Length: 275
Length: 138
Image (cartoon, rainbow over all chains, first blue to last red; front, side, top):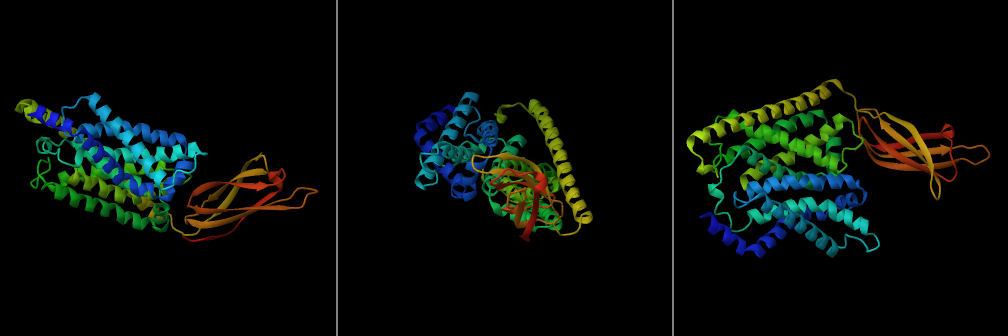
């Protein structure tokens, strides 16, 4: 039963690549057309970009194991899939930026490399989700049991998507400067409430280890609060990588984190419904 | 994978997994509560909404064209300001005074930014005066 699905899937390899490109575009086009990302490609410390690319690889690896259309894939196959996703990410970003005249002239190769490098991880994330999720190979998804770590990985992917798109912009800092502490204090329970609404909706989706009969506080603590803490952790990591909290005091950095944590939390919760 | 497990091993795996879930939930709850408490403390204790700008000179170095004084702008106050205009005047004996200026986009509260002020001659920090000219509230 599994073997037939596997061989069928292999025949559609070119389609998988095309879906990967589609996913890469969907994830990275907003960032590709954002001025701050071009500037970051020029000015950001190269080792921060390197940290993003290197820590992204095991994350995509775990995600590939979780949402790939088969659980029976070996580590080798998952490494291959993630490598292909990185390749799609690099190629797609470079091609689109070249067409949109963002890359700059041939006289500045390290600027072009920086711009491509910083776009690679979000595009690779999109490529991997595109190859696994879009299209017809979801026939096995109903048989897969959801695990807690799997759910957290999916939430991480959703949080990463929105926070990578929003973090480089100037607006995120402006919002945090204009908000005072009371705004931030309202934003935290608001984020938790909206997340929990998504979790509650996901409990009706079936195949989840949260059912409508689960006591609300159990689901709240295990999924909503955990997911929000995860979204906050991802937010502060992305903000740091993009150099958005450099020179800020700890309190200011926390303020920006709470602001970015709001869309990250929504992304995390929505990902559980969508993926 | 999970369907193939027999009921006994499944419950053992389930209870181990459930323990992990509750540990993660507990750590997350602590993080969220600590964050909320931190911001609440800030809201109650740290009032006042004006900036407090201060300059410290770090070092100077020569470029191919010009001499740079590297300095830090600190905002010790609780308000973030934007479009901060900074001017510096360098006075050396036997040389007419020279000014340099720079504008900072944002200077968050309780934070600092590094700036570089460029002059055409080597400047002794003792003969350097830096001041902020104006800013806007974001």
